[in-house]
Length: 207
Image 1 (cartoon, rainbow, N blue to C red):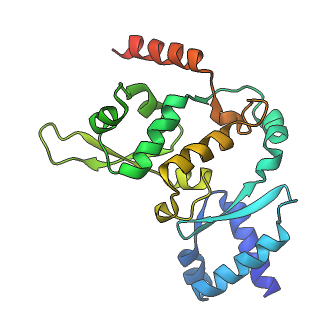
Image 2 (image 1 turned 180 degrees about the vertical axis):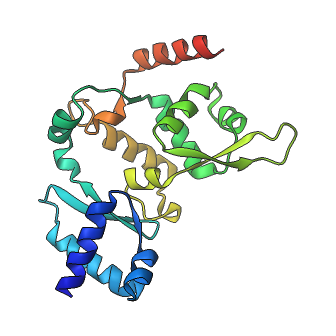
């Protein structure tokens, strides 16, 4: 069992991204249940006090950093806040999560305002992706959430989505601490007036 723990630990470290439980089981010729039990044991090793933790989502396993240390880690690895999610984008991803697959026009009908900038921002952050085209005139693109969305909001699958209002509250907590600063610098929520300026500039440049 210890040897299996070491092997799976090494796999997750080298992979960097999520690894399918079924892939691990098939290649190592063990059952998925054995993989999950080993992952459970590894989670005890990398507990809430560790700088590294193990997360599971959509039948995948991955190493991640402890969010408690996100500020310090970002200070070293990401000294410049290059990316920001506006509140508009956060509202948009919540709509997509619950209504997917959904078109841009359908999103805008729900929000009552244009969502071109928000969608582009979410695509850039890999929180949403194009999942097809709707079978209507014009064949508009359909959007859905990604595995990155599940990881970011600590969901095993879309069936674990909380109520819409609870997700919005989770988004708020995830992106801001009591001082209003981002706990994930790459997902900083900019002030509303600044967000309006960013969106207006984007629309000006992109028609």
